[in-house]
Amino acid sequence: MIPTSDFGALRAFVAVAEALSFSRAAKSLGVSSSALTQGVRRIEDRMGARLLNRTTRSVSLTEAGQALYDRVRPAIDELGTVMSMDPGVTGQLTGTVRINAFRIAADLFLTPMLARFARDHPGVVLDVTLDDNVVDIVAAGYDAAIRLGELIERDMVALRLGPELRQVAVAAPSYLAEHGAPVTPRDLLAHNCIRWRWPGHERPYAWEFCEDGRWFAVEVSGSLIASSREFGVRAAVDGVGVAFAVEEAIAPFVEDNRLVRLLEPWSAPFPGFHLCYPQQRNMAPALRAFVDALRSPYIVPA
Image (tube, rainbow, N blue to C red; front, top):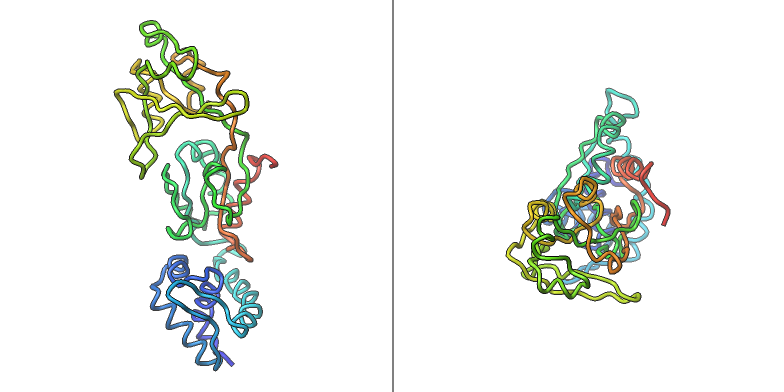
């Protein structure tokens, strides 16, 4: 019989069994890998059986480990749900949900639901990182991310948010009056283009267009490179050059005639933003509340 004081060790075992990695499980629990190792060894000693096969590169469950996981996992979930409740307010969830989101995705999907979520779940903390870099969600310790569909790993759960997107080239009327408008995407090579660099990448992003169903890229050049697309759009408003951004980002400036859309026949839609998170048999209550809140009413069926 395993005493109830070993709940933490059992939780460590379950985390390693699901992540199949001591380092990833340690990050998800906020503890050290050595602490997880000690916890798993304690359970193995009490059980008198090896639960995990370990090599320098991989971790897998033994037959005894799989049997223990199948029996313990439901109990861990039930205890976790009870422990996530605020004892002073029946049924009130508590906990922290760590989210990584592209900046524009946060504006489109997170900002509209924050007030409602805070009102419905005052005990849940949303720890949001706004970052246009594509990070490993599990390795970085995030619970979920909002990113473009084409950038989601295959082993992730992905829920579509909103419609498809389009990127459009734009410029200020003052710039076009002086330099003229490009007629085809390749004409951009003769223009001062405001480029954008993905965080962590050395080369600026090559602008992507579509012709007759086939995508192609144009390596534009120009006097300004920025790590923020919003910064580039505002530079275009000031007449610096031609920018390239999703329609939602340029819409306010187009509506008041501060920017003009260019090359629209070559701007095709592509998969939009998705909420994604690691596959898991049982989701933490706070994360489930966040997913449900984000999906309604903003979710669009895939």
